[in-house]
Amino acid sequence: MTNAGKKRLVALVAVLVAGGALSFIALGGLEQNLVYYWNAQELLDRGEKAYGATVRLGGVVKNGSVKWDASTLKLDFAVGIAPEAVGPSVVVHATGAPPQMFREGMGVVVEGRYDGQVFTADRVLVKHSNEYRPPAPGEKASEIYSTLVE
Image 1 (cartoon, helix red, strand yellow):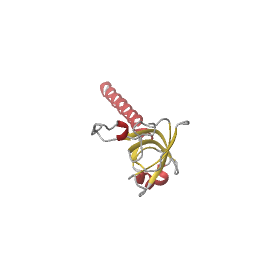
Image 2: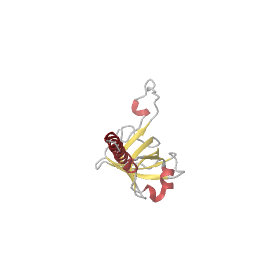
Image 3: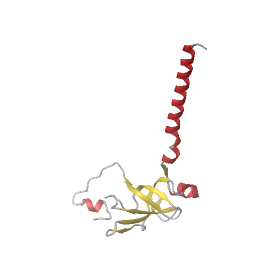
Image 4: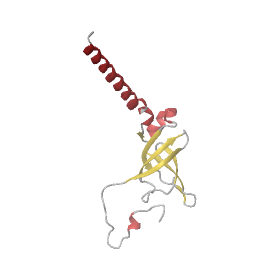
């Protein structure tokens, strides 16, 4: 083999090793960094596979489920597919002040972990319509939106 052929072979091996290392770094920890988006039924269907995984749980805050303690900033509520009592739901525990528009019947996305009993949320986001409706003449904005901290 000539000297030029050896240099090409060394260069090719170096490129393949570098490409393999880069692929391993990029894709190696991918599974651990995924954040799944599930509704309550999908989360419950996963069973033990969902325990400890970082998940974004989407749904609607169940009517009558909100328990807010302003002195300790603890918020407990249930998320389901519909605001009524029908259908599966997941109990969510969050700390910190809830978003201003948070209320029963409102669409939410909570990010956190599920332990089989309670979903512990690190973040609570409200989902709302992008349609704006100004208050009618004589109607106050507080009459349109009810929140926990009025």
